[in-house]
Length: 308
Image 1 (spheres, rainbow, N blue to C red):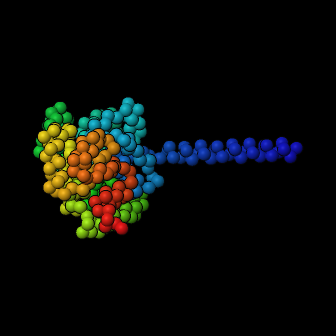
Image 2 (cartoon, helix red, strand yellow):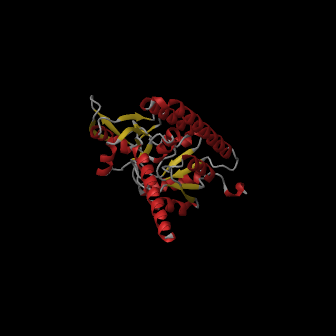
Image 3 (tube, helix red, strand yellow):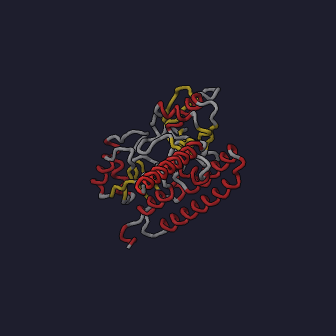
């Protein structure tokens, strides 16, 4: 009899646990969804939104937001979102934002780049629009293009955070106090990160010029008065003559490191490193943990001997 009762007790506990788990999963699934373009934007959004929303990234880990095409399932899932937060001017958004809007007309779209002092260059595609705001199909690389990697900057991060706060308060006014509190906390963290980076780069042993395959650190370089030297030319691999120029520039500028990103081929970086004695260092500006990635980038610019 004891064994029978013990068996029934275990069975009841198992059922109860499963029901609790199912209820919890249902509760999580019932949370409204916000879709963002990239993981760093998900980092900022989750920091402010807390548990009020489920935040998902459109561009998955390991994919380039310059060229990514969403899957059919992502387009279906997008219709379930309450809002879409865009980073501003990245290639994915330039190509897809009108299509995403058409696919989910009920969705509220927010541009988190509003107020950012943008850098204009000729290395990113600029898409012309007609009078109705629709893409005309005229895509060029020219001086009117926007350098889109705005999140790699503590200055810009504060602006992005403020735009996220405004968006959250627009779509969920009752929880405004909560969002303001979490926004203030995030801003303090961004300020601390900025202060640590400034201290690191004030070190006499810090490099003030670096080479990078894809120019994703333009705003980082502007914030801290650094010289970014991109290997990629106009969104394409460098020609043999440009490679030769890069090797000469590397020597003249006394570049010590070359940053490479996981989305891009590093062969040209390795070739330049072999010719110049520089070190190739992997970074991931698209990583979710914005704070850690920013600090690691700054630390890489400190000569190893000075760290001892």
